[in-house]
Length: 447
Image (cartoon, rainbow, N blue to C red; front, side, top):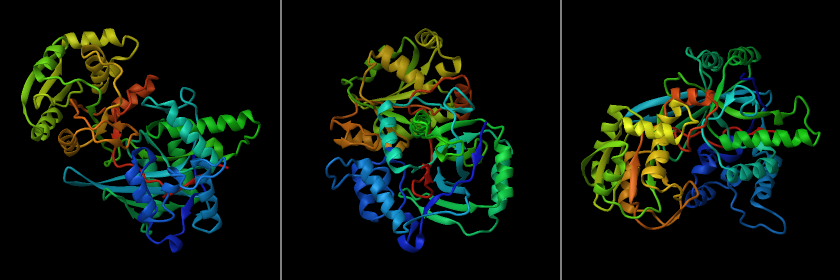
């Protein structure tokens, strides 16, 4: 179950760095080259130099990972980063706007005992890639720290653990930072042993589902395993734990946003041809023409609220097509993925990638699509095309138009729970938990 504990977090000394907003950053995997450079210029001690070091002046056998570790050691020597004493749990609020409404998501950062997936009650929900895990392994090993928190969600209908910690902060003044998207981040330290023990007791019978940070969680498990195999792992070793942000699935601020796809590598396809190909498993209809219809199309999908309803934009004739899975499509999904659960086969992203792209369009091996989350981003990229250069996911744009894009519903928290507990993993980018957690608020030393 969820075995949590306080940690001696490494935090910035505000007296030496000034504004916290200038030294924090979003997770490394949403930072493109231009944004990386911008963060480098923002402050000489921005955490970007740790989580995504540029390696500006490498020499000899130095790497970006050893360069990051060198920066971190120097910051600790200079008192830029200081270790909290006594150990603490960190209450963390994020306040943001969504569809014109101000929302606050509440959680807390702690250490949590590592459990290999499949051997305990910490569950993954999405597929991961080995290249990213190797990258994070080298960084975390060099720095001997968790530089960013994993995002975990857990079932707690009354939000009891969170309320215990909220009571412990009372009217204390928080640390505050505002990110590049305007999200307000607030952090309070809880050092009261009684409150920490009560929250840990409540969490002790809760499963945890990884919402974001699968690569970093598996990397932490790999570091723990490597130390154990080398005979260097003690029972109280901090490498037995990982830094996690814990958020109740019933917190009012817990929302899941969609991840729409703009596909690369497809030949031009007109709406009539698309509808003919999809007709085997979908009931299709033309909605209208123009990128300006994107908002209205998405609103219709949201109101229908069915995973199996999606919409496609064909660049070739500037046309939107609505596609609704029919009974024949359900049967095709059953045949394509008989080893998966019915819950998994009902996911919009599973239907999109397995039935539409791989089967009906016969394009199983396309480059990774461009993933976006808002209607405005869809419109912008339809009109701009696949801008050349590296995007935030590391993909290289071709400069060509996106010949096909798809609006698709996000998986729900209920899907995450059911599919994770069944021992399955969703297709990549099935969920987008907004807002992202900041790196640089708290660092967890593991060595």
